[in-house]
Image 1 (cartoon, rainbow, N blue to C red):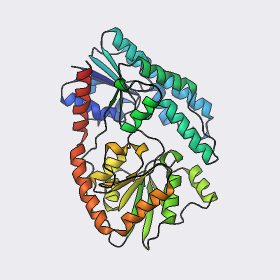
Image 2 (image 1 turned 60 degrees about the vertical axis):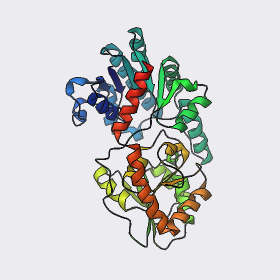
Image 3 (image 1 turned 120 degrees about the vertical axis):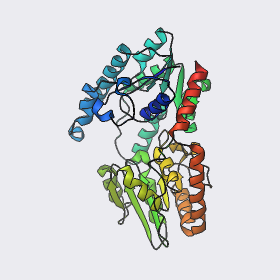
Image 4 (image 1 turned 45 degrees about the vertical axis):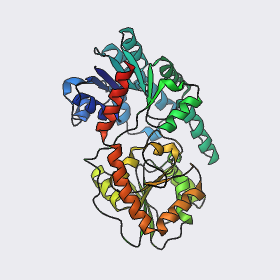
Amino acid sequence: MKVALSTIGKFHTFDLARELHARDALAAVYSGYPLYKLKDEGLPPALIHTRPWIHGAYMAYPWKHKTAPHILRNWELLAARDFGRFVAGNLVECDVYMGLSGSTLAAGKEAQRRGARYVCDRGSTHIRFQDQILREEYAKWGLHSEEVDPRTIAVEEAEYAQADLITVPSNFVKRTFVSQGVPEDKLRVLPYGVNLSRFSPVGEPAEGRFDILFVGGMGLRKGVQYLVQAYSKLSHPAKTLTFVGAPSPLVIDLLKARGLWPHDARVLGHMPQTELKHLMSKSHVMVLPSIEEGLALVQAQALACGCPVIATPNTGSENLFTDGEEGFIVKAGDVEALHDKLALLASRTVLQDVMRRKALLKIKDIGGWSQYGKNALAALTQMV
């Protein structure tokens, strides 16, 4: 069986591409990135087809923060439409075409016209659920949220309807699709893997301290607003809170204005994975209290470093670890529950050690990207 993949960026699609290629099942992979940015992806150049002109220009545009939102939305839609037409017009012979949602409809229809199957791969929650939950969260904090463009919603829902199968990364995401009327038998859960060659224990947490780590974009979507409140309530003589990822001056200023931003919080910004694994290994816990995601890869990365995780079901955590074993799963937006689990872990060093050991054992069960590739190929083979 031969599978053609597409993604306007890279995301997990290239991890899947490598696994399919290793199993002699990759027909081609299409990307909106320029070829030179994909040279280290471990794939033969002949199998990579790129269309970077519109999307690449958008990604490289340095003044996005000064540009009117409607202009950026139109640019994004143009890039997705252009990329989708490129894939459809250059689709190689395959048994299955599988593309990351948002730019797959034209190629999906072309694949079906040829007798192949069309799989829509959605990395996050159902587009309408995503729009609704984020607008509600922004309104709760008195911020204006740009709703998802109705044209984007229309495109995504047309993809869901046209596809022979929709793959999603977690049970949480699956539930959002079912809640929006998508038949359960049209959905397949394929949890992502983790690169075990890049993430492993390279240190241990310091005794007598309680170092909390957050990794991700610092927006309201990731639940930063609830983490800082739980941290401020936590009583510990040597606690720290460190943020890694794209900072959000808007959110930080909002929390400062409300007296919620901790004076001792550290914001480190982006960090290479080679450095991140050291920070994960030396942290007592990583917290990801997201409101909405598909399946946050940083959770598996932390577990691979022996770092317990506290997360919400909305991060896809249920597909990665067991509540109370390798970490804790708490309801999104529940400050008290988050504080209680932090306090419990901070007060019991034995529990920290047990969870660190269990985290390393669990990641062996989850496996690397090889297991993801195996599961994906099995699902596609069964469908065909």
